[in-house]
Length: 165
View 1 (cartoon, rainbow, N blue to C red):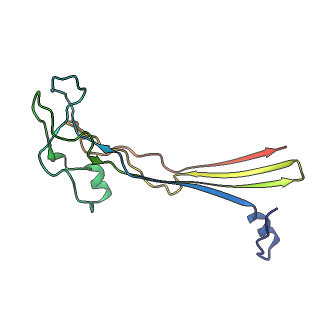
View 2 (cartoon, helix red, strand yellow):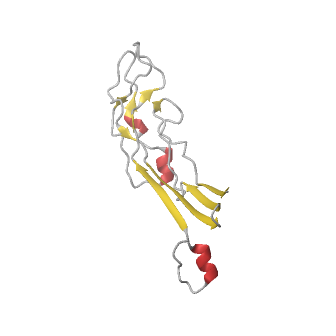
View 3 (tube, helix red, strand yellow):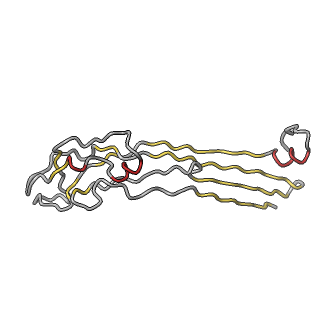
């Protein structure tokens, strides 16, 4: 058994002792994206035709989350380069949204004699329940061009019990 907590209440000490926990914090930047045309009129062996940049594609960082989801980048900054003309955009130059996630678990092992052990375990995936957004639509000409329409999973909680004998 672990060390007593000395709360002056034996029942509380027994309930709170011998717990262990761990966590995994993931913080990542977004993947870089490139804008492509919805239809390919390059007449080459490429599956996609890149768009052309005709203005400033970056937008202010002090917008609301709803505004960012509706228009992640300035969609009017891109134009069709022309039939048979490759666009002037880079393959990947727009940073996508990053993600932050904390997965945590706690468990307690309770021994009953020498051969019997009971384990109680609780786990939380995305414990902070932070909304991590998917990449925006980068196909110029699509109705959702520049919009973010997906998120990763919400918080998931699970409990488990195990008896070893």
